Structures are given as C-alpha cells and as structure tokens.
Image 1 (cartoon, helix red, strand yellow):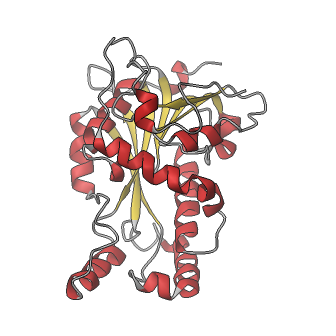
Image 2 (cartoon, one colour):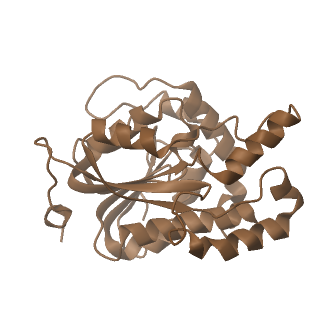
Length: 292
C-alpha cells in the first residue's frame, strides 16, 4: 500500500507544505513561486496526464519515447531504492517495479500524488511524497537510483534541484535526468516562426538546455557522465505540429529509431545518465550498495 505524506486531495501545494518540515533541518521549507506554478499546472492536467502516454499524437509519442529511453538507459538489472522526482501519478512505476527494492514517487502536485496513492503496487514497497525538488525530505546518500523526467525545465533554479538529487544519491548510484534540447532543429525552427510572426512562443514558460551546460553542472556536483541519449525525433515545428497532427505523430514515430544511428542530439530532448562519485572523486559500484 502506498504511504501517504502530508496530502489531502483538495489542498493546494502551498497549503500542504505550510505544515511540512524539511528532513532533519527543523525549519519550514520556503514555498517557492516556481513550485506553486508547477503544482497548479500539473493539478490542472492531472485527470488526463496518465492517459496522455497512450495518445497517438506528438505529445504522446514524446512521453513514450522518453519512458522507453529511460528504461533502456537504466538497463534490466537491480535499481535498489529508487526516487522518482516529479513522478506525477506514477507513470514509470509499472515499467520499473520488478527491478526496485522500494519506489518513492515525489511531486509538487497534490492531485498527482493523490492519484499515485491509488496504485496497486503488488507487494513492491511504494511511497508517495508531496514535496519540492529543492527540499527532498530524505537523508544524505539514501537512494541507489534517482530519476527526474520532465522536471528541471519547470524550475527557476534547476541546478539547485540537481544538487539535491546528488545529495540523496548514494556513491555509485545512478542519476537519470531529462532536458529539453536547445539545439533541437524543431525547437529552433519553432522559435524562428514565432519570432517572425511576433507571437509568444509555446516554449517561453520552460527552460531549454545545452549539453555543455549540463556537463558543467554535473562535473561541479561530482557526477560522472555515463552517456547522453536524445529522444523524440520531432522535426515538424510548432504551430504546424498542432495543425498537422497525424503527420507530426507518424513522422516522429518513424524517425525515432534513427536517433543514435545518424547523430544523437537532434531529438527535441535528451537524457543524461550520471553516476555519483564518492568524496574522493571516484565511483563505487552501486550493485554493492543495493539492498538484497
């Protein structure tokens, strides 16, 4: 059974967090504007979020491509204690539950967490946490695997959240994070179209990232880069993606297998797999740190 964590279905994120404490620090966590903004955004879409993974459209393809790429990067071995930051209603749980010792879903959206609490875990220890990525309510070096898919682009200070993920990861543990790709041909063409017509870009509310800045942040946090893989082979720019819905979907689906064969980073986003180094700057083997 999922564990409740400071959540009532109809409360807002800010109201819930007013009564929460950060782990072992004693002070109330600051309620950040970007957390409140994200909670509102995902609360509004909570009723259809999981179903979006099954839709035959460009967004649905992107969701499935991201999940498939994440699974491939994590491999088929044991993942130990796993933290899913921004895990929403638990859309990755079924895909990974057979590999974990415990699965923790954390999100700022009360309605997403409320849905996650309804998951039938089949005996897998499953815990649901309403909390901010800036203040993860766990001790240092607590998880073997940390997952953050579609999260950092909504944050005003993404590297601060990545630092928190590094804090709670065990030495030798894996941190897997997705990033919208600033170099994506689709994003570049979309931005050019919206600039030409002097219209607000659909990407204005979220961040985009370069591989270089991600590598710099990872190195600063003593995270060893294992690999970077692009996903979502969407080439038709916005707003044509909406107008040419079926063409956008089937073209992206057809081109997806080419990502990695003819260049890796022309997808709309990429995933970075890192390993946390120990204090001396070298990696441990995570397998020895996982619970049997």
